[in-house]
Image (cartoon, rainbow over all chains, first blue to last red; front, side, top):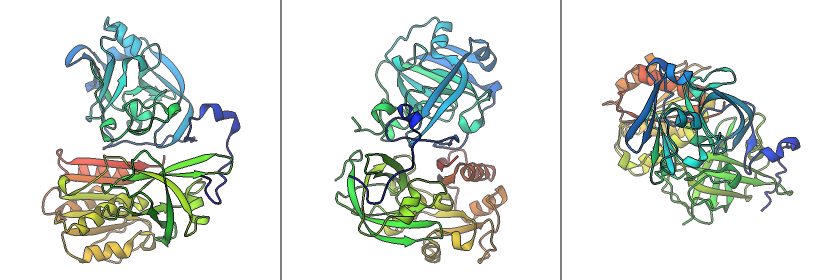
Amino acid sequence: MATRGFTGRAQMVQFLGRIPPGQHLVTDFPVLTAGPTQHVDPNSWTFTLKVGAKPIKSWTWREFNALPQTSLTCDIHCVTRWTKLDTHWEGVLIDDLLHDASLEPPMPFTLAHSVDGYSSNVAAYDLINGKAMVATQYEGALLDADHGGPARLLVPHLYFWKSAKYVNALEFTEREVAGFWEVRGYHIHGDPWREQRFTGDE
Amino acid sequence: MASEARWQTASVYAITPRTPKIKSFLFNLADPIAFIAGQHVDVRLTAPDGYNAVRSYSIASAPESEQRIELAIELLENGEVSPFFHEIVQIGDAIELRGPLGRHFVWDAGCGGPLLLLGGGSGLVPLLSILRHRKSIHSGVPAILVLSARSWDDIPFRDELLEMDGAKDGFQLVLALTRDTRRRMTDYQRRVDSDMMRDVLRRLPSAPSLAYACGTNKFVDTAVDAAIDAGVPKETDIRTERYGG
């Protein structure tokens, strides 16, 4: 249905193939957090890999930064409709975390946990083969608190709520366990190219 | 009843200016939506060539009215959708929307209280839905709203809020005017800060069990940090909704 009188803003045609349906470009970096901004001291931060409830390996901030570091340039897509192109991140690939823990993905699903109780669920196959990392740097500087520092999950091919801020654990789960937004009406998978925004989309 | 993921066409039956930059658009829905105070809807505009623009807007009305909902839309400079609403939309226009969406920044009687509500400008909108709902169910839950705005004339829904404040039913309104002089001794003429929050917390009969903050990210960060600094307990569930960069 065409809306009377609406023509829309001129679009930047050169980027059209990179903007998923229903998204629009931004050049700033909007901040969306469900609770208070967390101020996490890196010196007391650890990151833990778990299989079910069982911790397999933990890294301190220092140990984490001694792991192989990878740079990633990607487009990010927020379910609130903004898309930001060519963002630069640095951190540790989930592949490298698994390798350091001598682990293959032992179960098909994961839950990423944050210091403030936030969580997001991501299938294991969405995290491996270079697709995702735990990011500690954004645009060449340490990740700030507004954007989830000291560390956030980065799964750029899914809507950005999946990329949990203030992340401190990744838990493999046998079954798909819905995370914070997923139990509050957001889509269990969250592929922006298929517009999987809310429960009931597709 | 409309499914939250399904689009429906709603018609505009009234347009009411709330401040120089905020206008309310009242919609008749073909399919009523059962929502919880604080939820939002997606609005979709379609150009003749098929191009879409979609934005989320919080519902300002109370859930008691399922068939008629109110959205209060702030005009954003360089915006794409808000200028369309402010400049083009007329009574009788058909607009596509879907919802209700979001189940985090919500309140109903089961959530309890006391409530600390922190709003920056148009960030009032979901809080107003909560307050309207609180009023219409005659909830006695103590609630205090700190609303920050530039000036007296930039306070959205000012008369309604003043009237709610005057009802003395456990709700209190506190205005923080950043560029204007206060009209009431119980208000402030500065930005939200920790000292102000200490005063505000003292006006509640007991510590808030729930806090809701909505506005720009900068406002939300400032207000929530001030509230924590002023002694909002660790157990308080602080929910935030932010917009803008």
